[in-house]
Image (cartoon, rainbow, N blue to C red):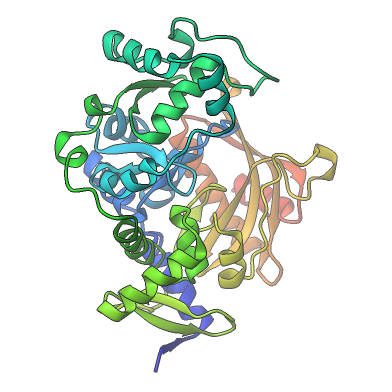
Length: 396
């Protein structure tokens, strides 16, 4: 019979698996700490929005506390221990997993803009590859005959279409970023030969390993949760998970209140109580599957960046706050670097949680985040039911 777990046990397992269960290290954070944290998460979603700090730096702060952001850049662009690829979305992934993405790269077909480019400019894709081969790492705009934007401000130039095609199929990789602009180079000059030239797994084998990694990173979840982690189809995920159950790598579990069957590692580390304290970016691995966090935490969450300002319920870029074993609040944050302020534009406590207790703990996290970002003050705005208690806590 499948193992039965209470909803509370499932929450604990999920928080612990994501490295959020205990206190942060009380020492200086090293590059090895960063490496191990990314390895435990499996991947780190990249996002360009910089209203507070770019999203991919925050999960490491949530788990490790104050650390030098350059340590992540070092791992990616100097040590080449992580690489950029399309996983859940644009993500950093440990380079030892590069082989798992090669079958995906091999299946890409030239469609839409790429197909049009091949028709309009025969030989241009080969020419772009040769330019990078001869000149070294380049941005799309540095290509000869890069062209002009073909649509509104987000429209791609011919050079960008070509670079992204070569990136998607594995001919090019991201060698560096400056001011967030991608610098492309030949993959053989970015990914070490031991990871690039090994045996290429079948699609099924790569998906099976992705599912094993996703189960480990989640601690517990459904087939849909795990499929979303590496962006594979639900049916393929179910087939691979069934094989992992059969081989004894994972187990089927039942979770109180869940309609779908769930999966967990064969050996669950612990379902003992946890004591998390962390602000989470909207793209933190714990919360990016909105259906999963609603199932686990009864927390309804949608990012409102693309919602008109007058229709936003909580704010432009809202961070969930996990405390103990629950997501207890959400805060809309902005880093005002010119005046050294971390501004809380809005703060909202979830129903059933004590305002002063949540505010006291949230104030501590906000002060820590401000220090990490090199800001000197935390200032609370006016919006939200937690603001009065948070102002009082920040004043103490």
